[in-house]
Image (cartoon, rainbow, N blue to C red; front, side, top):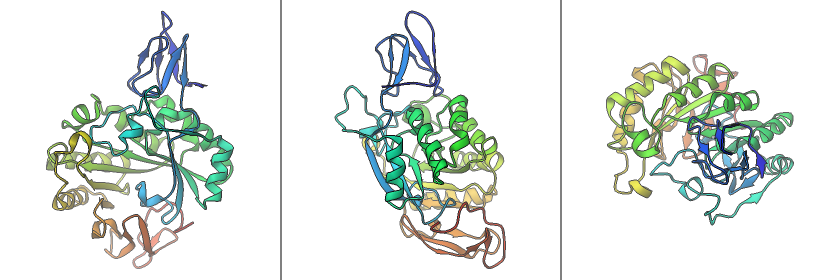
Length: 342
């Protein structure tokens, strides 16, 4: 066990976790909402420090991150638990796992071994992904610090439900923040993710971009009947433009039936195309169509001359027509972090 970084002792042996906006009050021997942080005699412990349930050398495009070291590979790791309970979660078998009840095996990977595995697999950095990285923040901080010392990049693939203190703790050593914005004013967060207030998610995304200068990309899984109204999609695009910048990539991604939302049909491609059109109408320079392999909306186009700069198929980036951060054709500034395949 590893003592948690973010909690306060209150009374009667209880503690309050301050890692995420839920601020769980946890009685002795009990777990917080995430299922992996336990109070033992007035001290809060992270039960998954270094315990990896899933690991893979993934293309960075799979995260998806389209403007961050395109064509590179990230050593991607996940553990158990989450501070949301999304009813359609593709990784529910680890994200919904309770440390007491989970049958999923984990492997302990010390930080020094994590760095070695990253290098041995030819990866350029580490991505904390598959389940919510916030809930094993202690391991993420130690791993990110070690990664930066070794010249590796660091990535959070996150639902964004993190406290300002926790974000500030990892901020100095986190390069990219790929955050879900699952909805805006509709029913998605309370009905599907079991989150009542999205303001902390919005605030964290702004904080990552403005205070810590992280590279931020936003993804919205467009679910029919939940967050696919023209008004809600427009509000998401407007938030990104006004608070994160017109250069911030927005991925409007196709939903496929799963888990408790198995009765919902896949997102019509025309709805994703509408989302892309809305994003560009609101001033965003880079809006992508996700989960539709071969769709032209996967590609990166110059916002000025319209030329194809990065052609993608699925999770692979093929052509790369950007030189020194500029469109090869009209010399418009294209905000890409890192060179292709670097």
